[in-house]
Length: 435
Image 1 (cartoon, rainbow, N blue to C red):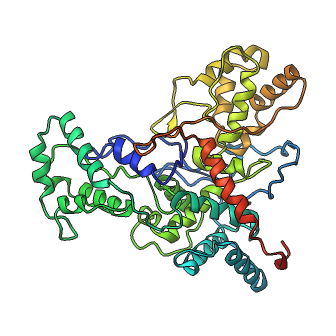
Image 2 (cartoon, rainbow, N blue to C red):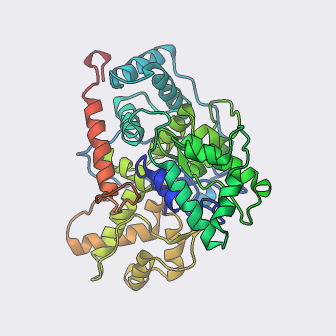
Image 3 (tube, rainbow, N blue to C red):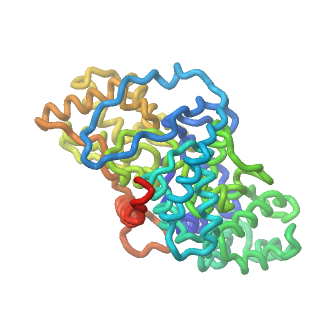
């Protein structure tokens, strides 16, 4: 599944279900990050092409869908070193800062610090200073963290102890061995037990697991350990995405330790969160679909509409989760997804072989997917059957899961919540600034 940015309680899901002491023997089950519609490489791969145009034109909810001009296949795009962002003029910067300050909530802690971090991210990523883009970022920050740079998460200590005991039992390690290991002194001078009992925030939890992973031998536990925390910061950013993005686009700050640790800072969390949200092109008619993508993964809203179109061509109901392929350890799996199986059954009508279908589906996380023979053939056939034009975007139908969620929450719920905050923010746009 792509970057499923659930709520700021997503950390709890990882804490409650990830391998706490085994350290996730497998890599995260997310595909490589994407910038400007291009799949970014795995940590050991060569850098992917750097983006040249970070965002599309601002959406207009009433605008009809217009097919984009043909783009070259991903494979033909030559590697290009990231170019330093052009500095805005002094007047543009002055107006941009004034606009951002007007759009920020009036009552919030360290308003000036938040404004600086957000503005610096927009400048570094070359995103226009407009109410549309500023408000989209502000809405996501407010939804994910309510303007807390390192939110307190109740009950982290209990969750960690419970999962440690359950994981130890699976490895045949008695509970007293875990308790004894955690009594040893950690790098910050406290015992690991004391640190677990005092856990309040995800930043503290991340550092705890970083230390445990580095001291697995000294702790004497016969199991591998690796940091299972995969998201963090005020925008719940994927660490994997941040590391990939930093390889192909210049990170504007000096990295004191690692990109992982930058994610857990306010400046880094805001920067990479804005990159996930805005630093790619799409053809959506309204911002709410970007918000859905933020939760479900890049292009999930477009892909859900594609699945919807496939559903019109067959009798069986098709899931609309925005994932067209199965993924294992972050890579497309050999096994067929429900969507791919459905497409194989339609292959003759589409005029495409199974191999051609797989070839085009491999671009599902890019803008170029819209130029493939598969994408065009599915919509042409579905629209012929429907007798009218079909939407190219739809809400991904995904249920959000977390130990802290006791009611039915979905990606659509998330997107609508963020969109409500976004609309409220837009109302703060000052008329005297000319927007």
